[in-house]
Length: 57
Image (cartoon, rainbow, N blue to C red; front, side, top):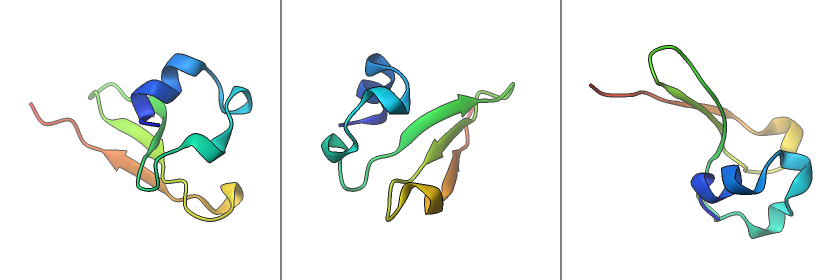
């Protein structure tokens, strides 16, 4: 499942994480520069690294 599809289904508690793509990202926020904050779902959820995807103009 892509991050875009994840957003269509709602909050993390409302989706089965078994359906995530192996290299997919879970979007959880945006900033004023239109950068995207994501989790990289590798390993246990408490240890997921945060990935910031920078918006290029």
